[in-house]
Amino acid sequence: MKKKSIFKASFEESLNLEDDGFIQYQLKEQDKKVSKTPSNIVGYFKNALLYGVLTLIFPIGLNFLLFAFSIMLHSSDPKDLTIPISNHNFLTAPVYVIGLLIWLSFVLIGKALKPLFIIPYRTHFHVTTFLIWFVIEFDLATLGLALPFITTLGFFALVCIFLTLIYWMLRTEFKSLKSRMYGEVNTPTLLDKIAKGISIYGAGILGLGVIINYILKSLSINFSPSVTLFGLFICWIVMNIGIIAMLIFMEFPYFLYAYYKWKYPEEYRDWEGKSVEDWYGKRYLKKHKELLEAKNEEKINL
Picture 1 (cartoon, rainbow, N blue to C red):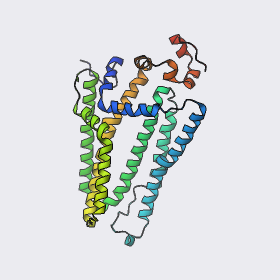
Picture 2 (cartoon, rainbow, N blue to C red; picture 1 turned 30 degrees about the vertical axis):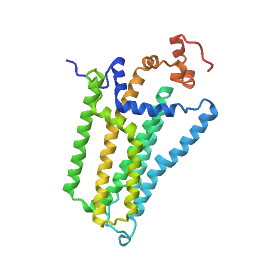
Picture 3 (cartoon, rainbow, N blue to C red; picture 1 turned 45 degrees about the vertical axis):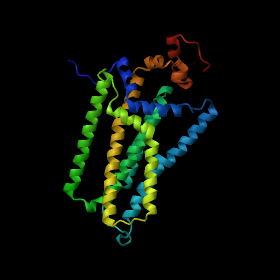
Picture 4 (cartoon, one colour; picture 1 turned 45 degrees about the horizontal axis):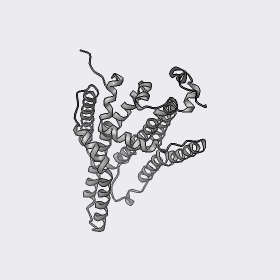
């Protein structure tokens, strides 16, 4: 019996991905952004300028600020610090530059994907890779702070725990996707229910966190440095587990869906009832007029 793969489904089988709760949530958010797409050249250049500024502020700027803060912290006089830190700074200039070059490489490679229907996924991919880059830098900076308080055995135990969790999450998600794509799941799964809960109550949960933080500050509760460090360490672990879970359970299915749109573009265009112009965009059709001829559609004013 041929082993089923999540990357070798037929068009009809790939449509089952639309029943995934997290994909539904992502597509809903995507539709809100696509509806604001500029319809003229002025709007296009405004968007290009806006994205350029946001790129300088967030992917490049935030990561540089984190790198600069790490350098400043490790160059400080130990007497001026309330807690001891490691003499080894893992977030160095070469690490920042390598991360920047890798991220910019993804951006340049993404420029080759020009059909209009893939643009939202391309943009989302750049945001996701920025997040991964930022988390890696944050973890390296945190490692320099945590090293004096964690033994070698503890460090390797932590790595093993993370690797085990990643393996379990990937295995769970792959199994879930296979079952869904090949028609073995007919009812909402636990992950679908979680996705629905996030889409409905996500903002409320965030607001609750802000309120709790405000209450704790207003009560002026003072914790000892050791308790504060332990709390921050636990928060760091939880944050990393949350990011990993988000990438595996939310982002991976979303990009898998984009992969099948790229693999079956015409089938998905017919499925969504889009014209050739709406699906591929005028700029793409200027270089691929055979798409118009193949479908015998009226010539668009290119």
